[in-house]
Length: 192
Image (cartoon, rainbow, N blue to C red; front, side):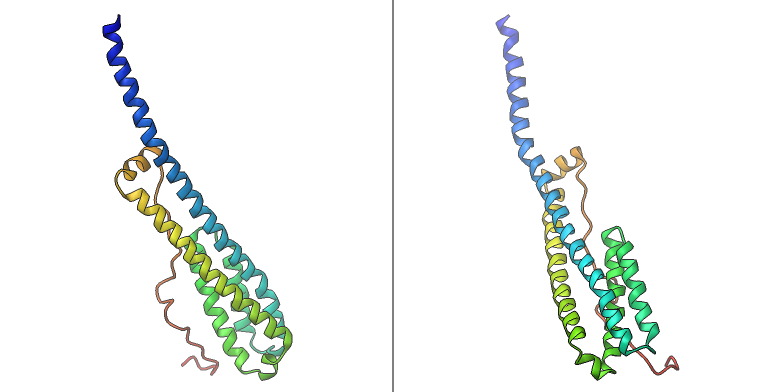
């Protein structure tokens, strides 16, 4: 009777040791995934703040620049696409589109010196600039959290544990190709 008990105890000890090794790794993946989700929530928070500020900015500019309807419409459409984007990739693309539209809007503003001196416009621009900075920091924090998490998923023995428990790599918040170039703005009307 006691002879058969030895292998059972050894198997039990091995199972306990394996469980003690797996639990911290599993919890590390759970914590990493939560950090990514939390960082992404901050990106979404700043994107929403940006979306909320833009109608006020557009309405202020409309009062001064009625003939610049196309530029104002492009900002409004880009804002709507960003508000409707679901995934990090869609949000990054919509964010880039909105950034380009806002750049064109700022060129329009340059043509209206009385608008630049308007207190409401200056306040909105300050808030938008602050939001852009917060958004940049939130994207950086998100990408850092994704980087840490993805390293855990790819490294040994984490790759084994991630595969067993279904932890997959996360997507980075990336700028679209060509985002490093400033948008070209032409109000000449001849398209050249």
